[in-house]
Length: 146
Image (cartoon, rainbow, N blue to C red; front, side):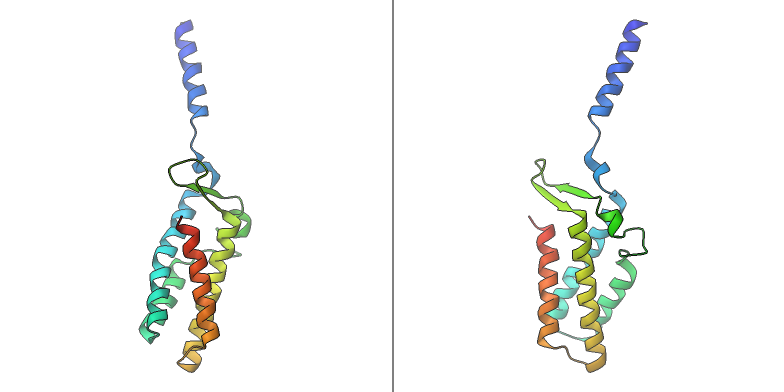
């Protein structure tokens, strides 16, 4: 009987000690971030190469369907600020802080919306707007590429 109790105690201690770091962020939320990033970056690249209405519409569609972040959503700044996402093979080798991620997602969203609005209004986009979108796209890409 004592061996059984000791085994259960040791088992629970090992279970507690081996908990995953996945508790440091919302796994579903980060999956949504990755889905958005994986979709929006190639679209931005394609649109910057050739600013065509179809490309701009794809960005609009992607923002509408996949961008689920921001104030008043489940993934707002308060929620994402609690995230610390460790990626890579070694602990701490590559860390994405949730607050920086939230801020960068908002910058990309704002830049894509400015690009879209300017294109829709004038059927062309200023160099300043293009550079702003390039900058935010690069920053987001670097956050995910280590």
